Image (tube, helix red, strand yellow):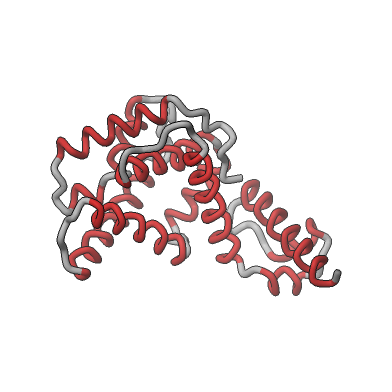
Length: 214
């Protein structure tokens, strides 16, 4: 019973912190705010989660929601590239569709606060795409490409932080963000364009309104 109560308390701490970060952002959300709202001692908040661990779980839980939503559809993308494009479009559209979620993500992006576990997951998916396409490259070359991709993505998001989610430019931005690495490593442009087209057609058949970060 004590173990079960501990799990419930830990979950309450997380959900409280998540709501506060959505409302106030990462830096303005303090341990004392979380403790007060969750009605637990401050030390208990710090025991269960460091602030970066909260951010990590927020993103990884969101990614899992997107994965489940895609898998629940009648059809599935034809390959790992289409899946990645579809996943990226759902993720970024949902983030930019809500002002507070957008502000939170921009804060994390601008201050380079995305946890390593999130980077690792994203990189592993990109490696799966490259392997499925039988593109040969050394680990060092992939690291260079991944580093270039991260810098480009971070800067593009910052420069377009006020973009209208319903504008044609937003889709153009999403198409670029989801394929930066593949463009850098030299994947054929016509192949990229065809997979973008197929993935975006798939997206238009989906209702993603319930797939939210917060």
